[in-house]
Image 1 (cartoon, rainbow, N blue to C red):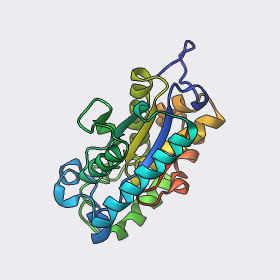
Image 2 (image 1 turned 90 degrees about the vertical axis):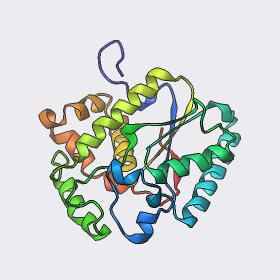
Image 3 (image 1 turned 90 degrees about the horizontal axis):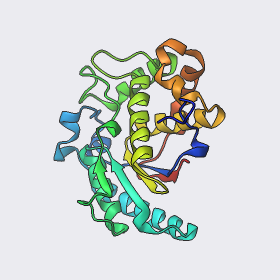
Length: 234
């Protein structure tokens, strides 16, 4: 996504508005399991827990209320979601609340919104192991766990999603339904871009440019969300 100068635009000149929604409480949440691979994440057994469906409905109702108060027509909403079962089910519930056909073009699963893959040594292990990953993320956001993704890797695929939606849509309300880490990283990236219009280009070249971008990405957990939380980011 580039302007005439070849630099990525800042959030102030994005063509669309962006909202983020963390999936409702899931079976992995309740079982205390890390489920971050596409293979496992798309299994129905790792979808929403019963409270998660209620959280998704409440999120849809809150979003509907806020859009109506802003005078925004609901048919301007485009939902892009991770293909994991817990995010797909969340997106489906929200689409139902907003009367948006889930099988239509307004709703689409996007691979770039998948969970931060922590690698085989963490997959299906206890949530307690998150602390190990988060410590590395904070100290070295460009360093990936063995067989997994770094924070910078996730940031780059999120930028690809942003570039795609900015190319394909104009004046739409983009609802991004994803997972905790990707949404925190997405918000951290947009926060950095608000301060510096060239920040997005720095993310793409993180391993070379390093310092300023790494310092923002390493703090992504300050944007932590509760399950079922929805809010506008830009």
